[in-house]
Length: 194
View 1 (cartoon, rainbow, N blue to C red):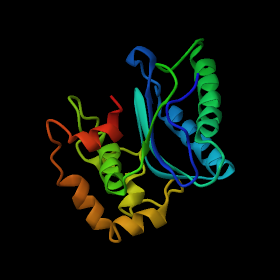
View 2: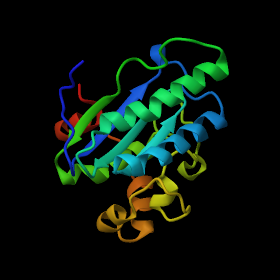
View 3: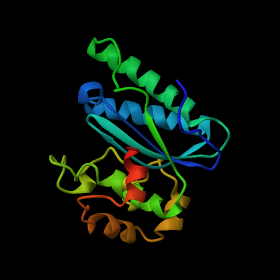
């Protein structure tokens, strides 16, 4: 299958997918941590930077920068092939875990990057059934790294410094946001590719 979007060095990409039939792709805390360890293992190998991520029970969002000519698709394949095998083995299941191949959107306008980060990080508190009341309670995103409350490795700190030099600035940017009923057309493209 050929992808509509090619991956290029220094490009930013919103990558996302959800479970087949909206099923849970993470059933336990251990599942989340297993995937995070896989990501930490393969990020240096594929020379990418994790800008923002959020793992949710039935889907995930990543904002990644490709720092070399090594294709992000190979990174995703390495991470999720091992994850799906482990998940299926653990739960005695076979077959696909996801709706299909991951979706990807090339973010080529810098002004949308910080808005996309906010969208990704707000996932646990937005929607019809928020998972937590306080976004800091959701451990499976790198929001805590962005606001300097956790020293995790899955984040590009230079990127954060360039956009929000003080952690409280990003925290206010995220927490004081009221999602619109409809996103403007430019931002909607980077979030959903519909």
